[in-house]
Length: 326
Image 1 (cartoon, one colour):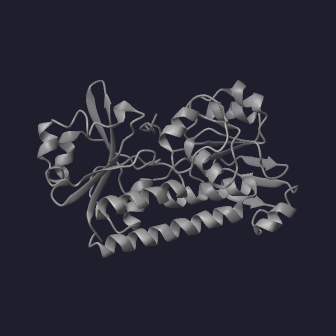
Image 2: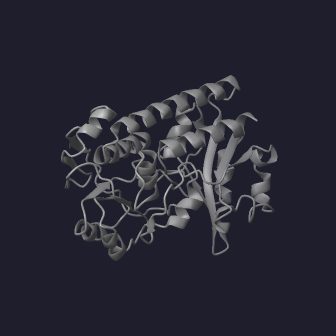
Image 3: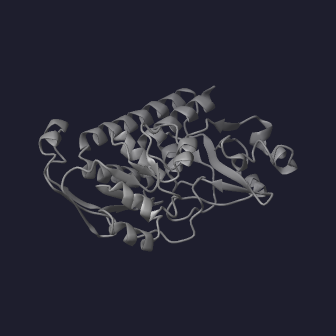
């Protein structure tokens, strides 16, 4: 199941205050000091104390699961394993983690049975659930998203998880790779005459026979990446304060106007996720849109997690460049 629209306000966005013995050293020093205790302060202001780099880690959200795997830490517990395998192909699971239940309601009993060193959660999880989890193991509770600085939030969460797991050198490599990918993608689009091109990205779904379309505004992670690529976000709707996601219907697409490239991500594993090639295929409003008439509608590959980490964003950049320049 995809990321649901959020109606609650974002949890506190207090900046991470992170200190760790030996975790900012190069990789070889990380290994030498692996027995050193680590102390972090998470985004709720709670102190997280670890005896050393966490090895047995549970992730309650797919973005933190992706980050853990990218850092070389295979989580022992993952929320909605099937969903992760469906929606995140950039960083596949390398082990067979225990399914701990849904992302919104993980099983406390299942997590307790895993005896983790650390549980990584996000502000999408209700505070009451986080309180229960703190009774099992240290919980690193991170702000899930921030429309004011989507890329900054992604990298802050990456750094926090890296410090908790003693993998800061790998985090630095991931960040450098992401920056290089953005530069490479921006150049490719500029060389193709697409610098400053108007671009609208969305996902959509069919609910009770009604098509709902979700614009990814400039405050979304995808939207921020698009702008780094030199694309101009064509959406004028307002996004939510966390994920930068808006809401509209097919009539709302008429406001995008002329000269827009439209892209979306759907998934064959979720039949409700592709109204653009399903319910809208014969809709008169949809078929009359300028970008539909011109064939400027691009379905990006399945399995690009729009709320993931650097490796999902790298995959997204490659797919956008390929779609717009083919």
